Amino acid sequence: PGVLRPAEQFYSTKCRVYPQAVGYSWRFTDNKFVLDPTDDEGNIDMYCYGGGDALSNAVFKTLLSFMRVGTELTRINEPPIGAGGCNVSARENLEKREVVFTLCRDVVVGEELFLDYGLDYDRSNYAPR
Image 1 (tube, helix red, strand yellow):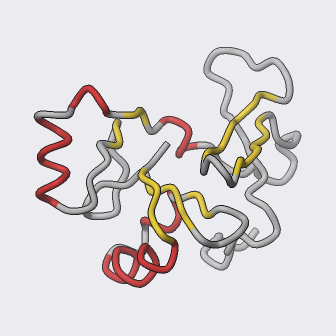
Image 2 (tube, rainbow, N blue to C red):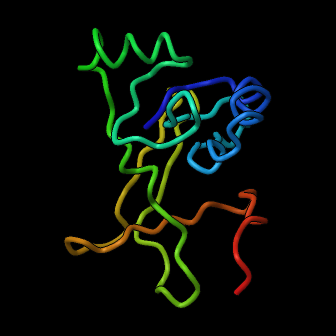
Image 3 (cartoon, rainbow, N blue to C red):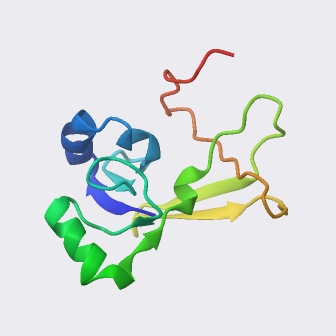
């Protein structure tokens, strides 16, 4: 889920002011676009409304609120060491600029979902183990 944004614009504007937005975004493998599920201050809310600034966010939250998208998938973490691996996989369609998430196995209600973020993900902020 998220708003499709040109990667260069996203990283040079929003992420300079709100660096936490990077951790919630999905960068496509061609590095041209990202899916940005954050609000106008780079935080995650229950829904992504589609705006790029305070004014358009206000429009999406009021007049176009039916277009909101849940942000649950932005909360999928990488598995900690020893957790048993991933239970979610992701497949990109670069032409449609969409990401399809699929369960790799059955999961039980309340079980945390884990996804491998890939080799290019910046893990420099991770706490030492």
